[in-house]
Amino acid sequence: MQELMSKIAEAIKAGEEEQVKSLVEEGLAENLGPAQILKDAMMPAMNEIGMLFSKGEVFIPELIVSAMAMEAGLEVLKPRLGDEAKGRGKVVLGTVYGDIHSIGKNLVRMCMEGAGLEVIDIGEDLRTEKFVDACKEHKPDILGLSALLSSTMQRMPEVIEAVRAVDPSALIMVGGAPITQKFADDIGASGYAPDAYQAALKAKELLSDR
Amino acid sequence: MNGKERMLKAFSHEEADRVPVWELAFNESSIINLGRFFTDDLPPMKLAQEMTMEEKVKLLNTLFTLVRELELDGISSILLLGTEPVDENHVKDGWGRIHRLSEEGELTAVGGPVSGPADLANLKPYHPQQSEFIMLMAAKGNFGDDLAQVVVQPGPFRESWMFLGSMEKLLYYYMKDPRFVHALARTATDWILELVDMAVDLGADIIALDGDLAFSQTTLMSPAQYEEFIFPYHQEITEHVHSRGKLIFKHTDGNAWPIMDGFAEAGFDGFHPVQPQCMDIGKVKAEYKDRLCILGNIDCMYLLPFGSEEEVEQSVKETIAAAAPGGGYVISSSNSIHPGCKPENYIAMVKAARKYGDYPIRIEG
Image (cartoon, rainbow over all chains, first blue to last red; front, side, top):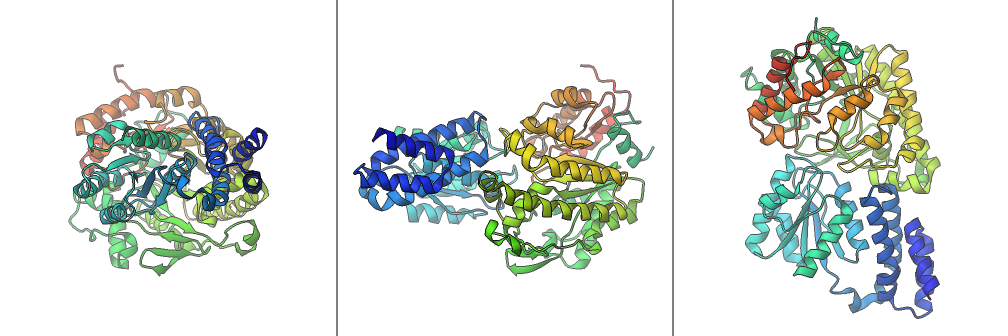
């Protein structure tokens, strides 16, 4: 069993989507619990890749193929996870109005999913009301706002204000190239991280503190 | 000495009469807000795509006015690709790439003619039209050889991911299908070489090879991946530009340190914009002063949008002290004058460049 779990982890790190799928299917056929496969093989593998990315030891291509392999495994697991999937934490992610850049947000999504969070990606270039509506509809544990430009990051305070007008205790994370911890603090964000992997860690930290 | 001579001196690592001042790009609203300081004849505040031809001409004239009034040493032109509308927010170019419009004035490809190796045959070459260089032709007509004519052109990485409509997809294929990545880069490079020829024929002095290869922390790809998938095409492009007797520099945002040696070895003549949050200009100067002309470094992320004019002046002074001695430095923002930058701060930047930029540089450390 341990050998199979190691193989799943290695296949995720290598970004081998098909191999991950068949190994996960094999695990399920051998009566391994879906949550066990997720928590003991898939998430640690993605965590390791994320950590190496954060340290500059692997780059975006490696992160992407691992995330795709993770996603392939999750597709197999999802129908079997059932209630076990709940309670992992839900995040709504989007890029603020005027900003059409998506790669930073997408990397955060990959890392957060790799950390076992449920992520709803609502897209790019979104007006404030879209974030408010998405929060009402999906009731996320965390709202994540992304901006690549120092002009568009100015829209973040407005989104925070509008979302908190509906839910004063909303947890809101911000990130993107121009964002700093100081800016995040100044606008009342609940969290900030300098890269995608650390954003996933920060989200989990915020959830555990709640 | 005129602006063009000043810029060329900087690229040959010599001291001119003063540090040249130039900018990669100004957005529509930046042009209009800066233009207010020099003229009342302004176009309405909207995106170029939404302007009538008459308003576009007015926008271009406003840009020329501010370049003239601020005595900039070079002017940048972009390729205005012919597009047709797809819907309210999207246009399609001659390659079949779908671009999303944004209020920040930047087009971003969100769909391409190719989705993966299986439909590579859908990528049909598109050849540049002279009319797409209208900005260069107008700039050349207005300034001739008084200013350096810089033409901004996406590089093979950006052109390649635009064929797919997604940077993530291209980076995925770095791992999964190197032959496909090379096929895209080959098509992109052939197109870029054609563009270079047309730009040079129409009067370009310097090519700015655009397309980010880095972000705040590090490069998008590893140095080995840069070496494999981008370097050979960069080398081919720089050799071609040099064979036409012109200069070329690489632009990328972010921390490009892991691939800076690659840029120098690929034959680039300069590097822009040395984003101060990620790269120390003193270190870049120390490492590459004989190989790369350095352009940029005045922070447009915080300083130009939110700083005071005094802070801008101080930053210009420090940057000139660090990068200008011996030549090889062109002052500009750390990316472009985007809509968030205060026009007063940009003017303060240019004034400070004049105040401290006379050679020989005499700034107390």
